[in-house]
Length: 470
Image 1 (cartoon, helix red, strand yellow):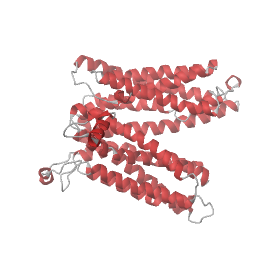
Image 2 (cartoon, one colour):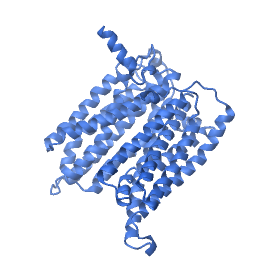
Image 3 (tube, rainbow, N blue to C red):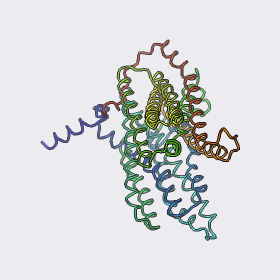
Image 4 (cartoon, one colour):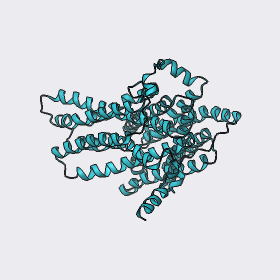
């Protein structure tokens, strides 16, 4: 009876129908642990340690920003990592497992030295400051390289072992677990560091290092089959340039990656600006601006739900991405207009549409990339998608914040003329640039939409799965 109850519980879980007889749900959930470890690393790098270094340890903000940005250096290499994992030759015939193992060890090494180097940075009188700076940079680089390697090879492994008709749904499960890992890690780290001490910082970061290894070992256990024929076969690995040229031949992959870059940048420049805009321009309270995060996430979740509904019924991924870009243009126009007429309601509606448009664009481009992966370059295709998305997002956030500070500062100082003395000018410029980026993305994706219609692709409905979470 207890066994039956347990089975009924798992059957009722979201994404349960992503499982098959050969790939049961328990195996999928175990595989998803690598995403939880990646989410934990992202929270530490971009959230917890960022705040601890600035607030508790009083490290210079510019140095913290530089350290946090260092992992971005490895984002463009995800395509190369995916390519090498496609053709990797090992003693057991594995392709993805060695790269996930390498990435895990890089993450562990980075976390092992990170807390000590950060503590050296916090003492401005320390004569070994340059040593702290060097090892802090090295630790952030190691963790960044590790998480990008683990995620690229892990997603490729999931695509390899999942049946073609289940792949979008499996990847959806993995991204849901990434979000779960980020939320759970943020809550856990916040609780553990509530009474901050240097010793507690070391314990938390080293605990994260150990948890990374444990979760990734469990995730990988018996996931990729041993292939002795492949192990002894002499399989040449073509040069990356040759494989890349074959991948982008015909122009579809190139156009898709351009859309990913422009669209991601178009939705990302505002990530650190929406709440300050609501406070400075519309006079919203702290609680009201904090609620914007929930509105944005709610819009994204609604987009996932609609995308899942449409894709399960044979929806076109390129049309979905184009709809996301179009809705984003409307959303940012609403945000700008809300400041002109001082309407908090219109601002909230625009914020929800931003999340909704970003969700549609993300799901659409990811599904399209997975379609390209089915042509034989799984690691390369998913790596390229991840590389362009991560790089464009990081650069867009940095550029958006810098533009806002520079333009608003010039406007308040009166350097732009007496008619432009407004702190909101910087925000509006950034939002206008985002509209421009999304317009260009829409122009680039229209030929892909028309091409897919002409080819009249009759593919099986994608089971993306997020609609089942409702």
